[in-house]
Amino acid sequence: MEKEFEDLSKYSSLKDRVYNIIKEKIINGSLEPGSHLNELMLSKAMNISRAPIRETINVLEKEGFLELIPRKGAMVTTITRQDAKNIWEMRKVLEVYAAKYATNLVTDEELGILDQKLKFAQQGSGEFLSHMDFDLALHGMLYKHITNKIFKDFMAIITQHYFRIRYYAEEHSAMQKQNIVEATKEHEAILCALKNRNEEEVAQVMYVHLTKAEKRTMDALNEQET
Image (cartoon, rainbow, N blue to C red; front, side, top):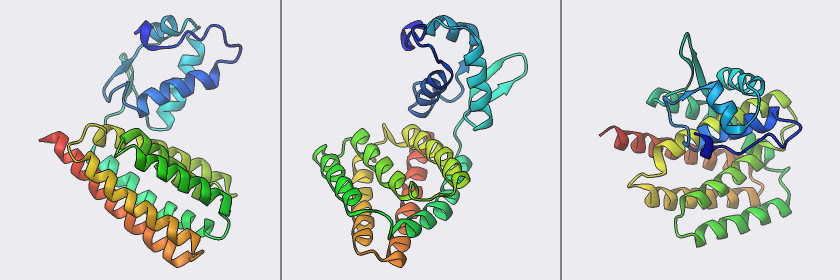
């Protein structure tokens, strides 16, 4: 385990860095569902005390990434089809609202940046990480204009769970390239509607995109189970 974690002893403030490192490893699958986290081993691996690790574990448990098991410690939560359905149910409510809300707030400069990111992702010929980078940029740009902090904080957690599920289900899926092609067309439609500054069109194409994205992820989960 020591080789998998950065030595953090040189940093004066550890709380956020420990939290971000462990959470990122959970989201990208480096720490797989069902993995157990041992405070002592983690403290040795990162050359720090156990206090910031214990605090991180408690926060991640509240956010749903870890489960605390009596006498066994922390375990990375499993991913189920119901988990995916729950996340997409929330996304279809919150992100459609965020997209409609942002339609007349997103700047031309921001749309230009998204255009460039989309072109870069397309040049990757269906490369999964480039696609995910654009996906994060597009969806993140829509709700960053919302001033409701509670909404934004909640949406950030939903997004992190969404990415974790997609990494788990789709990163090595046989359907990955076709999924990326389909999602890219849907992203293009969202960008087009935003450029038209049409709130109803933006809401509609976003809902269609999220509905199709849910099916693609569910199909990928089915593929893993067979």
